[in-house]
Image (cartoon, rainbow, N blue to C red):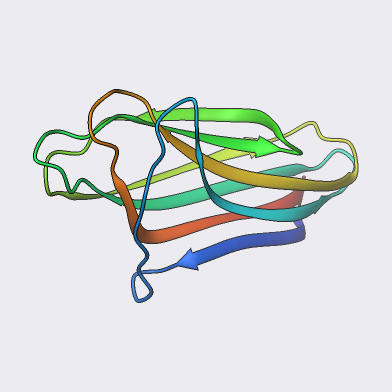
Length: 135
């Protein structure tokens, strides 16, 4: 049975508290969330993200690359396809960061638009959370 060691979250926007800002195009990135997490020796960190996007342009939007960083270094990336014109879409994913030595880690989530098409707007929900587990 797993033991929960710590929990961290960054929730700047839920459905009831929407936000709106544009995703930057590579090589720049937009920081979506950050938090710290204490991990026990031999433990793992289960990281989860949900991001609501909207394409406000008249053409299909740009693909986006989401990146999770630990202490400033990228540890996971996922690419999501472009959103059709004038459409809202939510992206959710999770990642298990395992094999970590005991310590306190800073986690962050960024997004970058990948193609030359119009970058989408982040409109919420915007949730980034993590749970430190000892198996």
